[in-house]
Length: 358
Image 1 (cartoon, one colour):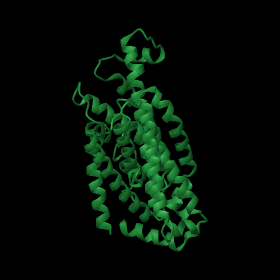
Image 2 (cartoon, helix red, strand yellow):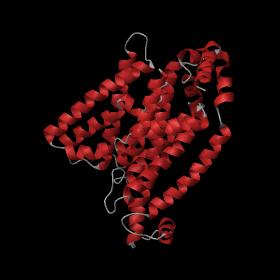
Image 3 (cartoon, one colour):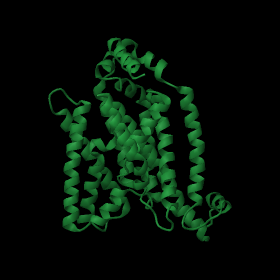
Image 4 (tube, one colour):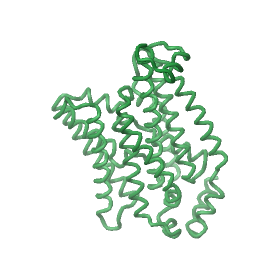
């Protein structure tokens, strides 16, 4: 099977004019993708209902239904559902979709199955901005902290792209990854230094662990337009990402202007992962795990990978948050820990597989 795959890839490189139709015919599974997306949406709705129903306070389903459609501010149960649980589960859905689609785009652009948005220095940039906020402006509101985290993520990503494109030969996937890893190491070290000097290690630790408990309607109102526009843009760019994932020479042979596509992809990743990081913190492995599973299920066409990743990413984070709240009540386990329990073994499996195929 592996030899056949490599043979087919070599044929694509020798016949770039046929690459698009051949890939779609042999490796795209639209019926499977549609079934997975529809089944995932049904499972997501059920998961949302369960997540809103379960928590530290035992609330019956009929009360949940009444609180959603006939909100009464005088009832404590309605207040808990409307002000705490609903924005939290909707935030989980947006965070999961954003991280998953950002990871899918990164893997397509870099042709690296181990890539996610963290490779652009995005997580470390947001963490550094957060460290500065905690150290020099400890009284900032949650909305301002969210804004500065997003700016830190965006600036660090722009620096990575500029560094990768400043050398002869332009921006390549390898240079992007190397620049991202280097800047991430620098910003992480600076954040830890600030945390030690100003004694804000505990505050940063909560952010690095990842969490959605603080999500409120105000954050969702800011986050939703960014994520919604970026998801639509990702679908518009999906065909170009598919061609780019075939390799630089093949995509250029198909007439693709790779420079503008890479720039648009980076902007979409900033919008998606920057919004998610600013709200939920540095939740790892979503952007690594979900796109890889989606690609195995639906093929290499990003027209199907992107919506499948969005649905599966949302479902993963909603279920992980539900598990985090119910595994050891009344205490909460960090959501990043729950996802890492799945993500770390999967990452080791992928790393070992890539090593064997070298």
